[in-house]
Length: 105
Length: 402
Image 1 (tube, rainbow over the protein chains, first blue to last red):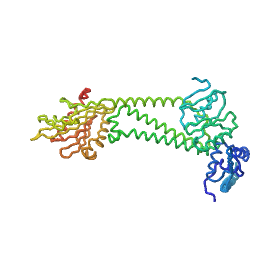
Image 2 (image 1 turned 45 degrees about the vertical axis):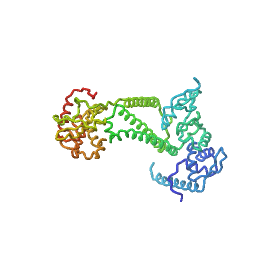
Image 3 (image 1 turned 60 degrees about the vertical axis):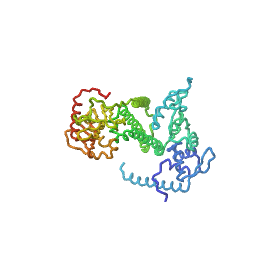
């Protein structure tokens, strides 16, 4: 079981999603916008901060650094954390659906 | 050398006034003045076209090894690095509001505030240490800061306290502001990039000017105090507001003592004053008093204080009772002084054989005496009472022993 770190921020979740495929900074931002169909826009500051933290927590790794751009990709541990979070979110939605069904609105 | 392409303005903002800085720089750009770099205490603007520019302060260390990385990364995102202010790295993005903000996730951004918070907390700590340092001299000299303030405190001392309090509040505001910003961000709300800064541009220079003036005032006061001549005089033959050895037994002859003639710290008097205790008389007297077969070495070390009111006199008496530098010489401490019922408002007494320490508080007067002699202490107390009553009745004479 992946250690319980509490809920992920949206930024973390989407970055991990985007890095299921090796990508570099700017491309990550574009990928996130695409994956979320324009709903989530990521600023460079948020991206930079989260990338550093995810790397520290070994959820992502540096694939390649050609001096100008750093390419990251998700690690096995990162995939585990991502699946965990996905399941958590799904459970949230599922529980909510039941409640919404009971409502009269 | 006046360069019409450049404008220098004083930088009045604190490191934690992030939103105000962003707002101000944006307004300047809208008027055609573009922030280009920082001077020592200033910001330098270059002339250009009025533009809608977004400035954002990022909390990061310029000395960090990956700072250049960050700059490149942000550039790719449309944000150009301009200058630094302490921990704040200032970036700009021109007009195109399609370029996303540097921080799009408030929760994540809240985390970036931590270094700023610690910096403000550290500054608050430094101010507290400074305050403690200010309390130290009087505390060491008089056992309690309050006693020192009563006896020596001038207007400058009180002004200094007010100054320190203001600085503490200022530092506290910084800590509080960063805390509030983090709270807002954690709620998922963004910072207020167009925050009003007008008040800062007026209040900050006013505050700093006041600090400078107060500082000068205190410095001048200190110089005056240090250079003020302390007039230590030999005891006059005439009248003093304190009880003299001769008063103890008016008929008995008085003999000067050899030791007293050699040392110049005996048989002297001097005066002091402070804001709260405006008249202070001090004297030491040492002579042989012949009341029985042989002269007895009699000592009177006296301090007589006139405070501005009874409450202050009571506080002073208590302070002296708690700690008095003279006592250490004789090898006992304030706890040995016992409060006694008497005709005075307050009376503390300690005695060891023929040696007495007495503290009297009557109205706004405090009388503190170390006495060694054969004449009973009760006689001394009666004389003290008489002296204080006559002081009370006296019109202010301005007799400072001069």
